[in-house]
Length: 149
Image (cartoon, rainbow, N blue to C red; front, side, top):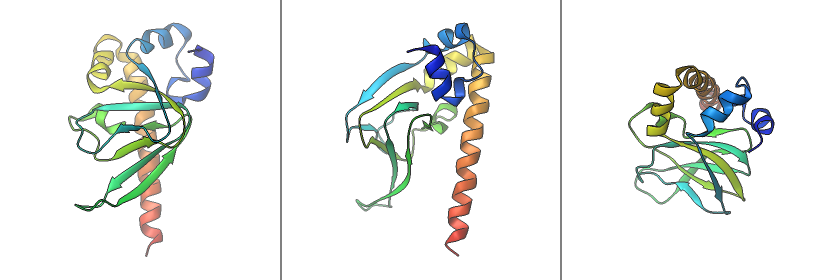
């Protein structure tokens, strides 16, 4: 993938120079999903995050023991999903599937830990961006919860 295009489309990489970006990409896999394909499902044990290059992913949470789901968000190009599984030992408590043809960069939990060990500055830069994304989502969740009252 073109380094400049990647830096423009994925905020987590905007501060990387070309060499750092090339070094970081060895830890990622590029994945293409057809519409309706599952990236992960609740309980499947997968521990990875996805950086969406193009397309759309819907993230859902299953309601208790029913077969009903609540849509928590629809994410497009530039978004990160599954980021909490990078820093924890548990797989996502959500399901994620493609709404349309989608391409992502995927990093597995163990590869992220390897990145932190081998290239700590790159890992720290990614952690900062992941934290900011998570904080924004938490703020939006608070807004949605308070709007119900």
